Picture: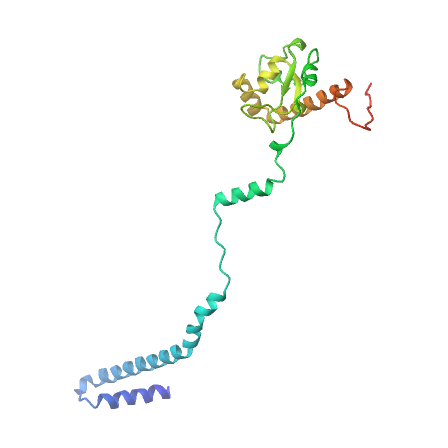
Length: 214
C-alpha cells in the first residue's frame, strides 16, 4: 500500500497540479488512484518479465534436449510389421501331402461328415458316392487344394454342403444356422477318417501303440 501511495505522489508530481472545479475534484482523485494502480501493475509486470527472462531464453534449449514424441505409425506400417513378426511361422508355407493312396482309400468307406441332414429334406447320399472331401482350412487357393491330410470321407450330398462352389445355398445355410455343430462335425469327421487310415496302415506313427475299441 505504501508503494501505491508513493507511485501516486510521483505521478501527480509529474503531471503537475491541474486545477479542477470543486464539483469534479472527487472524480479527479479517483482518476489519480486508477492511474497509480495501472502504473503499479505495469512496474510489477516489468519486474516479472525481467525475472523470468533467463528461463524464457533457456527454454528452447531445454525443449531441444527433450525426447521427441514418437510419430504415430500408419496402418500400412503396422500391417507390414505384423507380417514380419509372423514370417517365422506361416501356415500357408507348411508342406502339403499329396497321396493317391489316401484319396483312393475313400472308396467303400462310410461318410464321416454326416452334415447333409442339417439342411431340411436332405440326408447322406450313400457310401457308393463317398470321396475324399478336403476341409476348408489353410492352404486352399484358386489353383491348389489343402493337404490330403485334411480331407475326410464324405458322400456327394455332404461334400456339396462342404464346398460352396458346388451348392452355395446349402453351404451358407449350414454355416449360418448351425455354426457350432458344423465346426464340431468337421473335427469329428477328420479324427474318424484318420482313425480309419491308421487302421488301414495308411498313417504310420513310429513307436505308437494302437488300441482297438472293440
